[in-house]
Length: 222
Image (cartoon, rainbow, N blue to C red; front, side):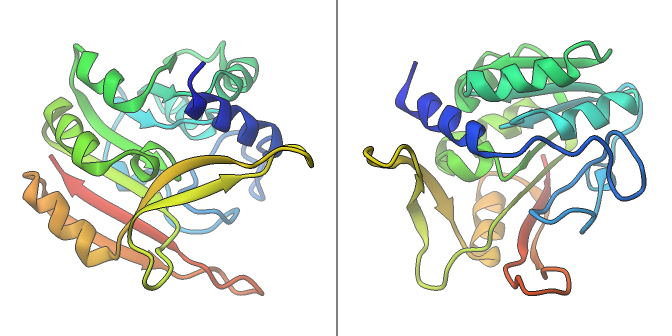
């Protein structure tokens, strides 16, 4: 197992499971932000039943599972065996849902069918070098297909490749993974340079309450 997979396995053990139902009583739902019942939903992907959609860094599979309930062919990819094990235990029998263990760039390079949309929620599009990932995503998108991803906004002055630390045991050093932080206008420029169109990046404010960190949401067409 790679160091990256080990790090995300560690993260998986620290994350709570998705609730059985949300505030509306739904058993599946789509959430772009770090806050429950906040922000837009699946409409950002602009897909209908029968579309083929890829979740890069699907984690425990909740968003991909929701797409499958809508008749979408949902494909989830994650590098962490622990994350995927949890996803399969909860959603593995759902029709229309595929789950794969792979690194994002490698999976995209080997994909033999195009996608109508590709998305990532605090996932691989935050934790993979965009100079490697963005070109192969565009190659695998159908013409006009949607790319959308969300992540935490950058800390002022801390841009580009940064380190994220995942705590381990009290006598162990934290696991370290890389992430790529840019301001909205930099993401917009980067995506346009790789041939994406209709590019828009914005920070959605946090909901009312004590927490103030919003969510950076980036959208584009291939």
